Image (cartoon, rainbow, N blue to C red; front, side, top):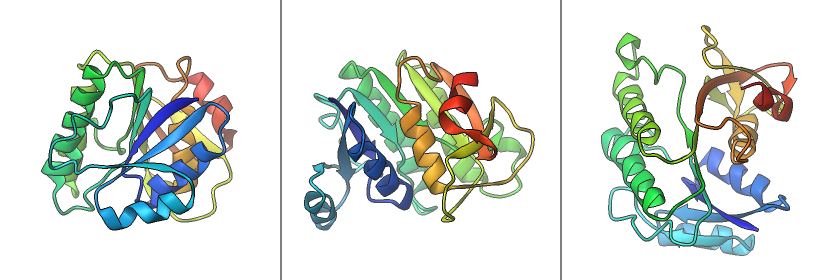
Length: 208
């Protein structure tokens, strides 16, 4: 079983990622959490945790890790420190640890943050983190969903390098797409956008 570090494991999307990985016969989730009180939730589920803060030193977090999913977010509070610099630090640590693949949860609009009318700081931070990942030498996938909803996912998405439209997608389907992108043969060194759609996630990812 390969060990998958999930940064942002305690978030709404992060918990869904952990849940999917728990049911995998290939991957074992390692939940990266920021606060000691968040550990018990995962312990109760039999999930190993790593206590680390993206605003501090994360160089030890990727030791013994095979692949990484970055799903952490500042919630708009410390955008530069978490979404940009925190991501960059984890990318550097992953590179140092010879991680096989780094899957980044980004956002629609992160490719052209200067065109955004709102959330510009956030999209700039995501853009800079994405670019750092692309230049890191790591194998990667950068997943850029539309607006996240808490609706029930149906396992189907619309996908393209650039969809040229806005829309929504349930967090569950985003989580499944992130996990699906961990595979070596899937979305290798690709960045792509996703919305809710009509194509099953596995088949959709094979097109990218």
